[in-house]
Length: 500
Image 1 (cartoon, rainbow, N blue to C red):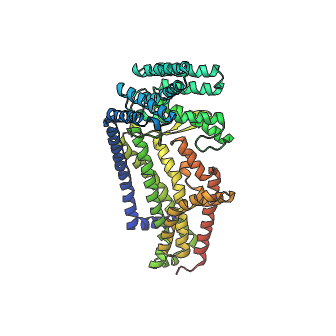
Image 2: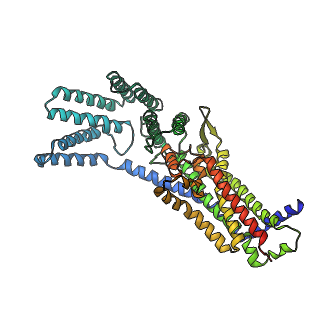
Image 3: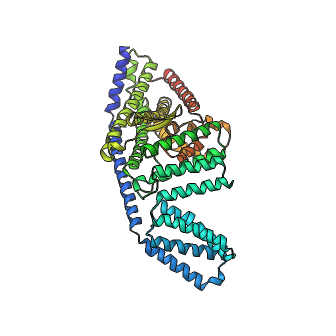
């Protein structure tokens, strides 16, 4: 045992003496700093864009639209159909109302939504009924639009919510809504009122509107049995996933936890931290993969080309032990580096974006939402990513052993890593057979499949669509078989072929 440990120790020394290893470690640190810098620049650009939108003279733009529509109605009235005239008249009314009440259409909050949806529709209906001579119906729509305008003039957010609830109850009594749809509408309105979603424009809370919309779509999915993202029928499994996602989104609103990819136009510190985590994770995985491929891909072939492999023939080491030591050392470097770089990533993120914005991972167990500590989640997330790296590392070591050429081993492994998934996505579009799930590339991306609660449901559904809903356990089995076959191939080749 001591001799084997000495063999591993010698392998460690050789790996860390290589310039390529030192360069890769430096690149990992640079990647963390670059991720923080790029995220900060992205936030600055988003803030600048928001300031530009807020500084636009929206009143002048609206007035120009009003003048244009009035001129069109005056000069070309005979050439316009009635529907177009009604649309233009309604647009003139809401544009003028926006100017009079200082409603900036470039910002997103409840007044803009009400003006563009309910009021705009009521005004169009009013003009339509008047063109048909139905004054009673036109008066009803006019009263409705005036009532809604009153909420906006008085900045009465709560009054508007109550009005929407009364309208939903009236629709239920008339039989226009079923009981479940009514309850869901009241539930969404309660959330909007409780968390004051869209009450005022606040860029740091803009994600809440997207989360609320997501909950609304998920409720529709449960009622219709059709996923509103993929438009596929819900299975028992996906039905449960939608229910769990609603619970997670409720938890986010309750505890003010920003999800990644929530559709924010502007970046708050919370969402910036999410962007940094994603960007740093992507950079780390790429550089770490290249690093481990280089280490594994040159471990045997470089010794053969330099002739140092002959040294082992004069020592009492069995060949399988020599190869096993190289495999174990590479694996240890991968695991230890992954843990260290995960912790460093947390430190860099805390320095640039604050430790308070480092939020953990949410998941549902036994009907309740639980949160994994951010540091633990960061380590676990990157360790799951290390599984994919390990597969390519073993592939590189196998090529190095069989081909005995570093360029072939490293080049082919990196090319496979970079191009394999892209090619498989193209194949998956055209091939709809069950056998493609046995292809290793369709069983990668384990991180996004295991930890998918930190992204929006639409992004999660897209991930499931790309992987064909392959169970994670099945993917582990496929990758395990691939690794086993590669190990058998490399050990058999190294044992039989001459190394002297």
